[in-house]
Amino acid sequence: MTRTGVIAAAVLALAAGPAMAQQKTVKIGFITTLSGPAGIIGKHMKDAADLALKELHGKMDGLKAEIIYGDDQFKPDVGRQVAEEMLKRDKVNFVTGIIWSNVLLAVRQPVLSSGTILISANAGPHELAGPLCAPNFFSTSWQNDETPEAMGQFMTEHKITDVYLMAPNYAAGKDMLSGFKRYFKGKIAAEVYTRMGQSDYQAEISNIRAAKPKAVFVFMPGGMGIQFMKQYAQSGLRDQIPLYSVFTADETTLPAVDGAAAGNYEAGFWNYDLKNPANKKFVADFRKSYGYIPSYYAAQSYDAINLIDSAVRAVHGNLKNAKGMLAAIDKADYASVRGPYKYNTNHFPIENFYLFKIGKTPDGVYARKTIGVIFHDHKDAYYKECHMAK
Image 1 (cartoon, one colour):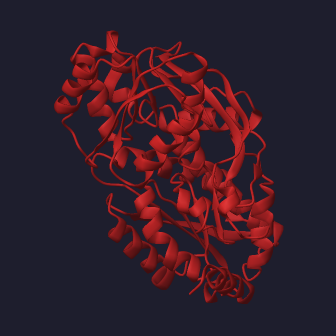
Image 2: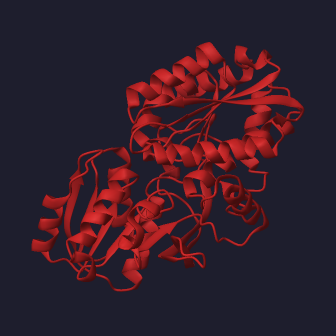
Image 3: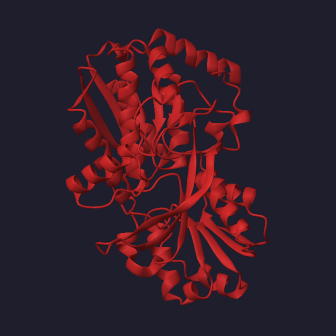
């Protein structure tokens, strides 16, 4: 089927409304990683989604709302199977969550072709921002390239040259380094892709030592980041070659690395210390409920549930009105924890990106402190490749 045919099929499915829309319960399928080392990310996402639904008193425009969780086990084929079960067995109205870009790329076809609304609460592969954009796909996070673009811009502005790049060898890892190189104007000492789930980085650290770059930039999410940051600090290189990163030193990993990331720089679209009313409430309620600082994974998931609520309210609980819900989602008319934002033509947010520095909070916990804005209202690099009319 041609690209035009795929969009037309999706629009027809949306106009007809999926059979599941006859339900009197809003069913949300939430796919994340709940087992293994990456399960800590899934915990942040689940805790935030549960908090959002609790604050909505378990209802959306008077309808009972239910979140059905599925564990992708860090595997694309499992993620697709979970999505198909949610669609067929649970008859979900929305699918959200999804940490990994390779999982999202596996999930997208069955979900989007069914006419179900898919909202990514993390992964942002470039394909879905460009040629695979779809009327029933939205993001409450970012396109993968954008955050490293911000770090590349910051490092260029500060005349940092000769940078060694590392990321896991999968869709997001490649997007992250592409984004960094788009805005970084210095020399690339090396571009290294490591194994997904790798835990030993001694060989890579030895190669960094031999290359003698001016700085290292990495994307190492979850347990990979924990192991890399610990080993990098233990090697003694941290004091010789500064480490810059995205999605590596965050509230899912910092408790496990303690001071190994102190002083490191990160970039991102959200932080717990952003001073807007919705964020202050979210962070306070989250810490009161769970006893720890939420991560951006949590923030994105909290936003996803509230975005869905805004869509259900806009159609007064008429789940058959898929077009009305999509039009409401496109307005982003809800209190986002990042502050107000707009959707681009490819349904990725146009938003700010910030610089963070790792340090201790007043209560002695390591966290990211917001230093300033790198990009205002930043658009991803692929929206012009999306031929979907808004």
